[in-house]
Image (cartoon, rainbow, N blue to C red; front, side, top):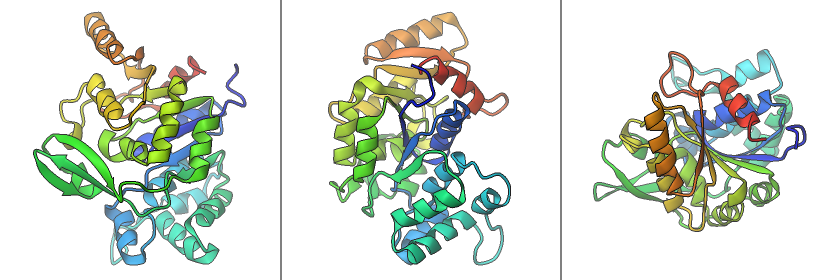
Length: 301
């Protein structure tokens, strides 16, 4: 099958999802992005508290990654205020807040923003419910995605409050209809796994296991995944989604053949076949290079 016309669903949030969407666009694909709405920090958190809306930040980044609008409109959506009462706010977040009011709902706001940005593909929230992410860290319950992202202890498990938010039907359908489903990259517990915790979406992903590729983080993260190997990242995903299997992974190539062989064996015990590739950005630890990631994905599609 050629890349053209391939139906792809990309699941995650934050900068990691934006990178995978950019890579997919380099392959001339028009994916459906399924985005977590558990964010409660920064500009998104302020808008959640002040306006009672869903957090727009991760969806804004996904819209920009798929945007075909060069110049002013995209620059405006990406602009972030540096001083005054608006310091820290992204203009794109404020536009989505205004459109939610003007268009009568969050989904309509995303659709209008998609037209303004000439988005190639679709951007969908995983749920329209106002969910909050909770977790256990060293025996203590921590509430809030932003708080969990700052912990220094080990996260034992996470859950959503409310625990059974309804999935967005279009997001479930996108997974069911996809020829390829990408998970990650991104913060394991605070960007990717929250989508798996939306029950109906989690079941759809488990049913689509044969079509899943996990784009593993490049290095152990600070805080929530400090010291994690690729196998630890994968195990955390599997542990939060009953029935999920991940048959294929893309991982950064280890520095020696011995380490690569050990990683292949360790991930194989979790049921995953590994494609090792040079996908990291030169000089920026922990960052995927969209062009290198696109080359790795091309081998799979």
